[in-house]
Structures are given as C-alpha cells and as structure tokens.
Image 1 (cartoon, one colour):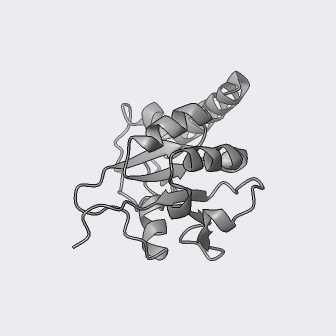
Image 2: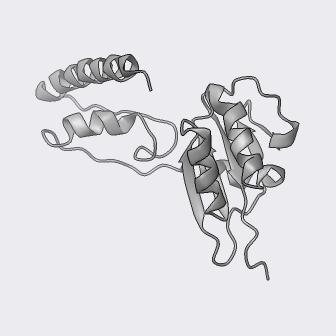
Length: 170
C-alpha cells in the first residue's frame, strides 16, 4: 500500500518498455516470458498496457498458478454450483473475512507477510480446516500442506492458499 512501491515499479516498467520499444523500432522481435497466465495478476500486463497499442503483440495464454496448484494438490476446487472467489492476501482482515464468508471455494494469492492475517480471516470464515497451502506450486521446490500445519513465517512470492468447495458431489 506504500505509494513509493507503485512509483518505483511504474518507473521500472516505463524504462523496460522503452528498451523493448527501441528493439521493436529497430525491427527486432521480442519475446517476454512469464510464469503463469500473463493476464492474471501478472507483471506482463504492465508491459502489455504500455506497448500493445503501438506494436503488434501476440499473447499466448498460460496456465494460472492456482490451476496448477489445485491439480498438483489433487484437490478438486469446485463442485456443482460452487462459486470460486480469487482474493489478494493484501486485503485487510475484515475484507478478506467478508469475501470468504460469501463464497464456497477460494484461492488467496499474494501471501507474503500477510499469511497470519489470511489465516485469521479463514478461521473467522470457518474455512481454515479446508485450506491448503501451496509453496512454489508446479515448480521443483513445490511444497503442499494443510494450512493448519504451516507456521506463520512470511510466505515466499510463489505461494498461495486454495480452499476447495463442498458443493454438489455426486
């Protein structure tokens, strides 16, 4: 929430997109690789917004981190009419709790140092026992465990929580 973060990142994307634009103007092809889907909480979106209106741009869909994580965890995420909500862990505890209470299944991303607050919101919403913590999902160092077994130290950048729904299981 610190405005200096946004300013710093904006300056970085401006500089990087300028460097890419120079190469494109020189007739070179440029490829940007990203982890996950480029249009879902991805850094690529910031480059795309700056360049796509001026240069031809082809985006190849990726697999979202959440999809890879619930698949590797062997955890069907929604059943029947379950509603899935994706939330950033950066929301305050009250907002997280309110949104979690209003859904059947959830994915919480952007954990980092927010993990204790996210755990608190899940407990208040009655979802803590269903919550699974996935660290470095789909990567070599992947670790999957029940959130109730995870310590509250900061979570690495590539981590998320999945809460499967309980809906219509036939």
